[in-house]
Image (cartoon, rainbow, N blue to C red; front, side):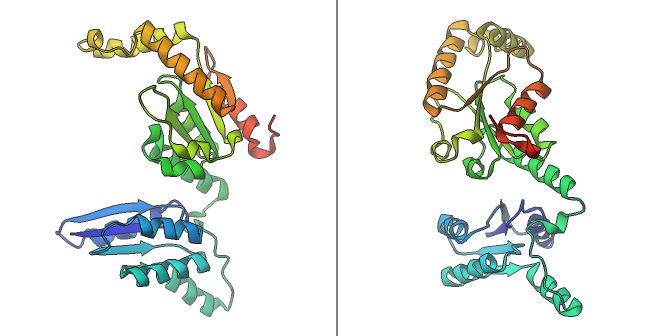
Length: 271
């Protein structure tokens, strides 16, 4: 079986589309994985070292940063991995014709408008890393939201993404360890969402009402369980010493404004 990695120094949309177009030419079993934000030698080494089985591997790259692109090629040659960069030859040819040095801007292929591109990238980021699907996005996030279930983390991430902010959320549960990456980033990037216990109970009861057949067996809206979760959340937040926002009866727009002010988005000073 062949596995293709779509590698990029941006969100990887172009590399993935080229990979999919390649896959469509074959009926064989082929696996595809997108690897975004490869912007440094360290990122390259981390990616190559993460590939356990280096047989039947192909990398389609759209990295435009010359030194990173060349280093990736070098590491692939050393590891015996097949690689092709689909933008490099095109950029070089255009450079020769125009007799002009390119800007080498990651993501420029989608650069119809800077704000539009930033928004699309942020929205894809929010979807990709929603609810701790992948902890690797933590170090690339503009803000990391933490909080218990039903504290509006996902809709807040999407709202912030619409403003061009790469937001990632991590649900807090006593049984699930907090990702180590959370302790390695600037604490100013972490925002904890808290809520009044009574409102949380009501929100969860309403949510469970849609699954009435299971509601009696699920502790999701149990008052004692929620108080345990809140106690766990409070201890963790104190340990992280991060920004706290009480979302009790607060509109998403209001919470988003506080987050944007805190991280200094669009020239607004943090406090």
